Amino acid sequence: MKSELIPLDGGPPIPITRELTLIGRREYCDVAIDHPSLSRRHCIVVRTDGLLVIRDLITTNGTKVNGQRVMWAALLPDDQVTLGRMKYRVYLGPDHAPSPSEMVDQSPLAASQVATRTPDRPPVQIAGWQDVDQDFAAPSSPDEIVPPAQSG
Image 1: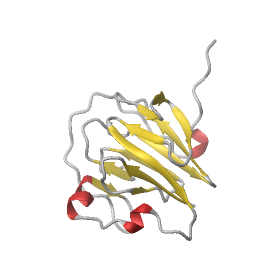
Image 2: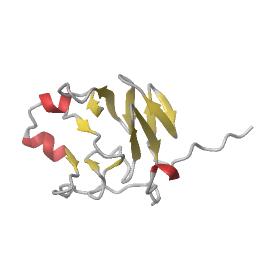
Image 3: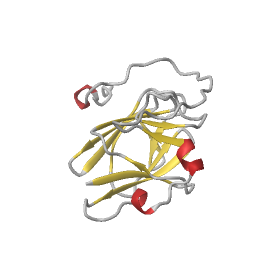
């Protein structure tokens, strides 16, 4: 299964190729996005067979799925995900069909705005913004991502 986050503003698609993908503003994130509305460590996307799960990392500007702020949610094809003020559409497709990122010409500008870490190349250094959120440790495995306790 190919999975990607497609920016609604026409930017470069973000392939989700790892089982656990950390998205945020900092260079150590698997996907580093240079935008002031994103936290240093904004969210984690967990990839399983046929499904993506997103987990907000207690961020200032939040994570939304289809307009609703969430702590975690399962993502389905064509769901709209908002990270801070950045909006994306979820793409899930078969391995044999070309994905949106395989059909897009990556310009130098697009590559400077989104850096995806690959095993042979670390992400580019991104100029930092002051962030108001606290430092929280990101889960190191999908087993550590648990839904919030239900009160009531």
